[in-house]
Length: 295
Image 1 (tube, one colour):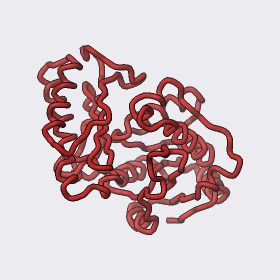
Image 2 (cartoon, one colour):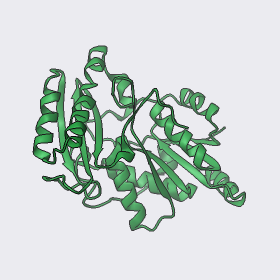
Image 3 (cartoon, helix red, strand yellow):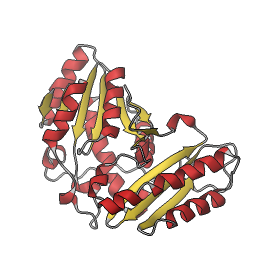
């Protein structure tokens, strides 16, 4: 595996793969890799002839309230995790490499970027979609692999790809979870032991909604009340937002009959904010525990 920090070198590698007729599978990450990321890489390895993983965190993706400098980073550890599973290139550029001085071109997906996460994190998705487009232009991958846990991000990237006629296919993989249901996240390491013990209440609440839906409940209001009641049973949990929407425009739903619904939630445990979601009406996105390795 080659670790690359310069865009020119990555472009050269991408051109080489193209000449060799090796379609690229791309896994974009912010580093601090965990089993959820690795499940994406294994699927990329299965579906692609060349696999590129990026580790990139830009201050443009953080709000003034968030501490960009405290975002977890450990490139050596990430490289150690990726090497055994057949990654061809690990791209780890600096912010200045991807967004040079006087960079002033931004991509924003209107009407989607300012909902859910966009309310709590203004301008976050502008940084995300711009970084994705820059990376797509450098690599020209055939596939990009993303996790269902970041549902809104996958919806925005799909819309950007459609609107700009990009020739990359998004492969969305189910959320991978620990044995107690907590979704794998780089932020989990910031939880205190007490907070870590409380955090699985998020999935218990979402799973309750899944069971109610399976039993025939189609009222978004009743599902929302049940979720809030379960979260409230854990004193250290504080809901930032809870929304039940359609899975394309992220518009609020009242009646879930005859359509797929996305249940999205963000919950604070102390200073750590965790997001999660479940999709109702589409079994392709049922979560998997860490005991079920993919690939």
